[in-house]
Amino acid sequence: MKDKKPMKSVFKEGAITSEFIGNSIYKHQTKTSIGAHNIFLGQVRADEIDGKTVSAIEYTAYEDMANQKFHEIRESSFEKFDLTCMHIYHSLGTVKAGEICLFVFVSSPRRKVVFEALEYIVDAIKADVPVFGKEIFEDESHQWKVNS
Image 1 (cartoon, rainbow, N blue to C red):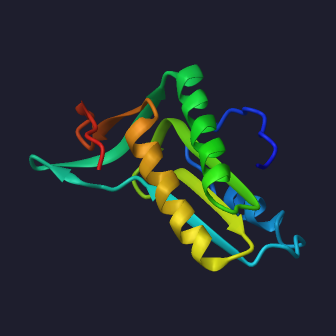
Image 2: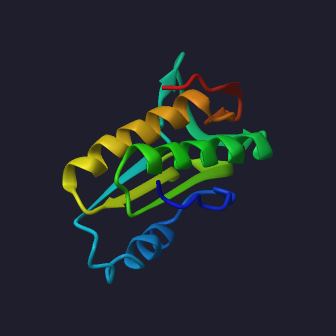
């Protein structure tokens, strides 16, 4: 069994930038034991709902509870899969349509593992983590988001 990782906050205020994502990936270029990386980027969609277009989502969370759930997902993923590293970041606050709100990055010695692990992680996040999104429409009205 691998060493347990310390619990850390996964939240970033606002959108997750391409610079942040690039820097997170760059750190792993020198690790010669890694054979594969896989990335999931959750992006705010400009969905049309009842004739109104989503312009942004405002994310809120029960932070302590959510960080604990993210930590549990991280620990179970390291136990279930042969992962070298993992990054999970989720936005809080307002994220505009087209911007990134969820970034999951996994690395492993083997290609197949990163695909299986990433699907497991993203499914667990969607099912178990108390993060809530309020969809804000172009006319500034809003509604709570249904997970999809």
